[in-house]
Length: 195
Image 1 (cartoon, helix red, strand yellow):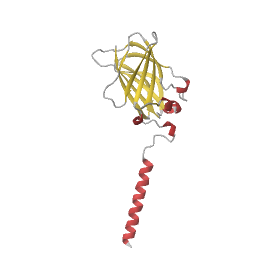
Image 2 (cartoon, helix red, strand yellow):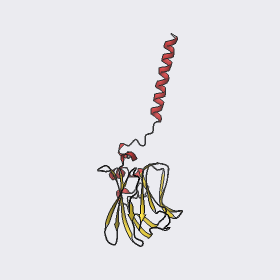
Image 3 (tube, one colour):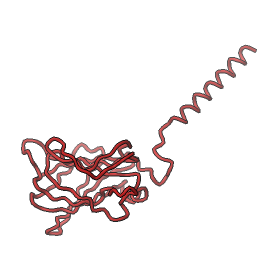
Image 4 (cartoon, helix red, strand yellow):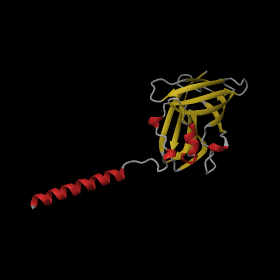
């Protein structure tokens, strides 16, 4: 009788533990259309178009790569820039549009003087009025401020941020465009900025 009671208690304990773990496991979203985990993104592409010449170059950051693409910018030029997300051969950008209120891009230029304006199409404007940042205009005042240090763009896509703002802030020798609180990182891509 004691063994039956001990076995029943053990089984009940294991079932309780199993149920507890399943309830506390991380679920990023209840909306299946909104799932865009970083491990499913293979590439973050920047299509950079010189406004004066109309010439476009696509820079492909491959997730988990050990090298960063070199984005060539000319001081005094204006560029129209579009971000595209890919999962292998599939365009994943539409998934962000389908869940636009759950995403926000932050642009960090740690050693550049670039004025950025968000120019998203209406489909990439959140319900709170903030632009996600898929399309932007860059006015390059100085591509590389300190030539003895690397200039970069650190581009981060946030998922389910609690609050967002398009405001910019000075950070060290550069500028960060966009702020957020809460949420998780869906993707982070690093690009070198060169002359």
